[in-house]
Amino acid sequence: MKIYISATFRDLQKHREAVSVVLRRMGHQVLGMEEYVAEGMRPLDRCLEDVRNCDAYIGILAWRYGYVPKTTGDDGATIPKGTSLRKTSMTEFEFRQAIDSKKTVLFFLLDPEGDWPSSQFDAVSGDGDRGRAVLRLRQEIGEKYLVSYFRSPEELAALVSAAVYRAEMSRQIQLDALAIEARFNEPFRHGGSVSDTSVDMIKDVIAGPEVQALQIDIGRGKEWWLTRLYFLASLAADLTSIGITVFTRDDNVFVGVAHPQIVRERLSQENPSLERYENALRRRRTSLRDMRAEVDSRATLFRTTVGQDERASPEFVTSSLLERRLSNYLITQGIDVAAGENPSLQMQRLIDWPMRFVPVVEEGRFARVVDKQALTDQVARLFVREQISRALSTLR
Image (cartoon, rainbow, N blue to C red):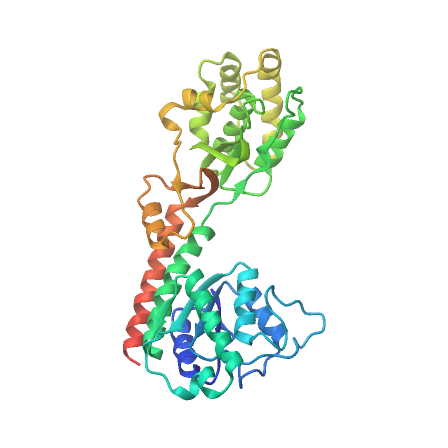
């Protein structure tokens, strides 16, 4: 990960160095550290750009408010909300930018009970305004974030290492989400007739860029014909590596997940036209050399064997139909990830999931599908890297 480290310079130089060392040993790219030759020498616009480009922000604050820039260094630069030149310190500018950019924020405050040179207190050194400013900022951070308190550079480095490890696991949950094709959210017009263009769209997705999952929004039960859903599942099962189909309804409410082959098999049962299509499909030779030609050929066969019947008596897909036809093969519960939940607990729940592909929901709404196999491989690598980093830290 790219990690931006924000801290005042004179009072926290050793602490910044300790954090930089441990993060580099963990394999991360550190921003905003060695670039500071002397406090305030980097233009503000460059600092804010680095924050915008990072994956995570680490803030370290003792009892100094820090350098207050008079200019951004770029007349056209945009400063974050709640800040102003000649009043806001560089450290607070960076903190506000991290919030505006929705970065992972990890903050560490000097323990109020810890020993600290009186010369490094703004309130003591004579700058009363900055003394009040740093007290305000410390209070706000302590109220809004789950902060950790440190007393030494070594303790800070250990705290940062553990926090970044947890943040990286949480981020990995996001990164290991499958590539999902969600273009099927409204294939047919509400209350209107179904045209062959919907089949063409199915063809485009199957023969298009490779994805690992499909999301089907069944809306209010008047968007999908059962026959078209079967056709999509049939193509996905035979011609692609798609491993899961996600069903949602209005407002992305999670309905359930199933493997495309299961959807295909269960929907074709007790449907004479789909059984005719299956029999005709078995009599022909499949060619994967030209995916587009194969999909076109199957679409023609589908229209010939199924088209007339599906138009005469269409059966719409609803939540109850899916539960009835897919039976126990439809998994109707996912892992509900609560905001602010410990990433280690999230990881444990994902790893304990009995299937490879894990549906993740947030407040009942579908969020993503995570490939548990890829995730566990990554967790193993993170764990080994963390253990090596800790072992190296003890040798310093």
